[in-house]
Image 1: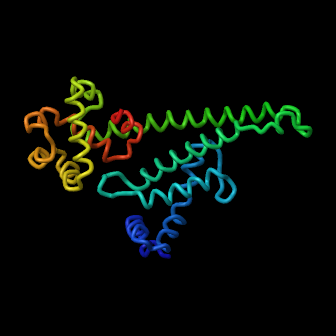
Image 2 (image 1 turned 180 degrees about the horizontal axis):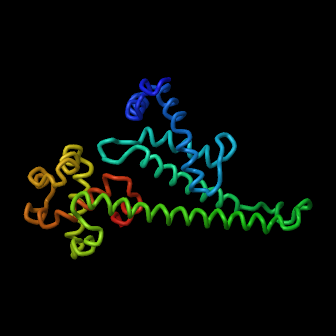
Image 3 (image 1 turned 135 degrees about the horizontal axis):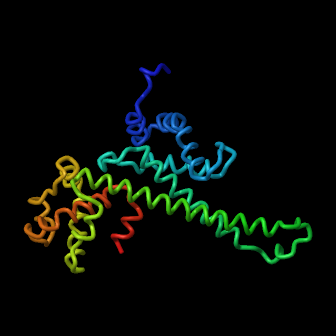
Length: 241
């Protein structure tokens, strides 16, 4: 198809999410190089579709990302898909490593075991675990960097978070609840992303916190709302604890 007649990514995503299987297939075919390059960077070697398990896991993850992507949250689709692929690969490696540790009794002293075979298997399992940890650490660092950049768009510095966080637990819980309301209410979230401000008048009616307190906790509520609205899985887990 000539370049000027190629369908945009947004068009393909919209059609695929509406149930058009041809558009979904076209999107996957078009971005297969992106999928493979993402996996190759993570595992540190070239992978092929139909040959490597990691490529198959990434393909399923990309398909999952098509269904889960929400434009109103502000992030681009490819960045979102990359995050989903990373997480699914980590889950895959953890599962594979866990299964490989379950050794049946008949395999403890196999007659046809090659010299050094068991040591090699142990090294492979250790390598998979180490890889999983390395990718997880890298993903966490990338997530914090992206979050810091996102905060800057709202005039908030990452280093401020400790200072602006409410000191009392009940105040912090109420602020987090307000942030969750903003992130989960499409109109509130749209207001935040468009104006870089909280919809204070409407929010005050939805929470038990006073307008004065909401204004005082404005930066903290915005910071947490961005976590809930974005793809910041590690930070979300930290906040929810």
